[in-house]
Image (cartoon, rainbow, N blue to C red; front, top):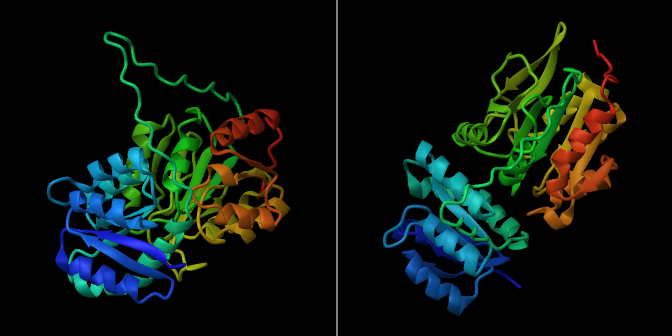
Length: 360
């Protein structure tokens, strides 16, 4: 059975190019192309596609409004077609929050050639989306008039835990929201967190800023040579590999260009290998939702070096590929639902307080 795709974009050129790219694949077909969300709504009803590609900026109803309604009323896999701009990045992150599986970024110039070059990326993400576990977007109930809005309780501070401890997180498809769920539960004095999320250049800065506005810890893109500090999270910049190194008594962030590893840049493999080599038993590894196997072997290396590792379970993943591979490599000490991961990390840190092992 071929993957049935509906393309939604206000540009006739883009609709034609995406249809052509999709129809060249032996395992998928473009069954419809709509110029705006209102036409798309009718196509979805009559054609029942497996995946839709959705432009963000369109007439009559923008892509975000349409996505929000779609995920409440008829949840289905959506790949957003974004723009490589700061606003495009912010709106794309909102789309992922609303339940879009993934996104591709249209080039600013030379749309025709640019989309053709992105053909493999687009079709791979459509294949991934077709297998994704998509959840209904729940509309929060409005608060009663005059009622105070309840805020989540702040997690208890961890106190004088070793500053040697570092949490390492790897994620891909579905990972922007999964990583947020972990970070927002961490107290302000949590150990440092280093994160590799598969994301292209131009998007990680907006992603870090969004997380920083939601979390008690400080979140920013990693900068080469900066000191790794408790209460801070460092996100690998799109298009660069990030790792950890030792500089005297301190850990530092290393950001480097280089060839893709496992077809990714940044690569989870690069970050986790450095965790195994440099941090060893003071590392805590976390593998979240994502397609493929990036980081699985290196997570096993972390375990062999004495780290403690937790992996997201299948039921709570958008895509179970990377966690499944980590489990298959024997890398996981625990496999659990997403919402239990941060409490388990905190429990583990409390239970091992004072047991840090200095690596020189």
